[in-house]
Length: 219
Image 1 (cartoon, rainbow, N blue to C red):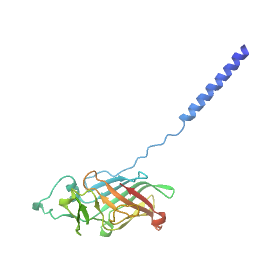
Image 2 (cartoon, rainbow, N blue to C red; image 1 turned 90 degrees about the vertical axis):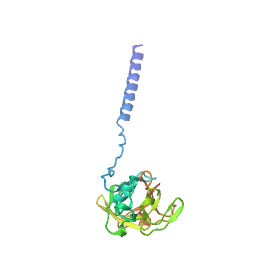
Image 3 (cartoon, rainbow, N blue to C red; image 1 turned 120 degrees about the vertical axis):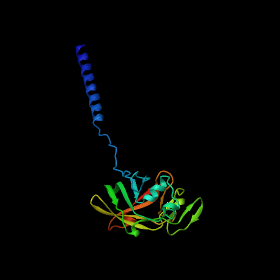
């Protein structure tokens, strides 16, 4: 009888040791850390547009350096007395920041495209549609219409020189051709939540965008 009891004790002891061993191994499994990004914050200058890439949730931000646009989107209006009534949103200086992009096996923490004084490297707004009525204004979008424009397109192709983690990149933004799988467009929402939609292509400088570019889709 004593031998049986001793054997049972050994079995129970072994079972308890196995249980605690399994439990401890589960507790030591590393928990995935939540990724946070240093997004741009409003400093009172210009307007920030933020969106996340559909497939990768990569956050991307445009900062448009235009305080007239900021005033209009804040609900302020202009009249003839202050000389702003002729304002059109045309070429706009901007900064573009892309966070945490996976590029050819590595994560680029932040790709930054700085604002430029060269109009060829600025967002250009002009032709657009509001309430199903098409407008064509080479100077830009009249301020009276801006508050109602939910999808203002850029109308010129831009290839921005950018840097990130010690590497050089180019970010391509395409002219307005309508959003589809094989066409690239970038639209800004001036009415609502300061979002943009469309596509960007990020390519390391010197490489082929068609084979080495990363496409970011925003909706």
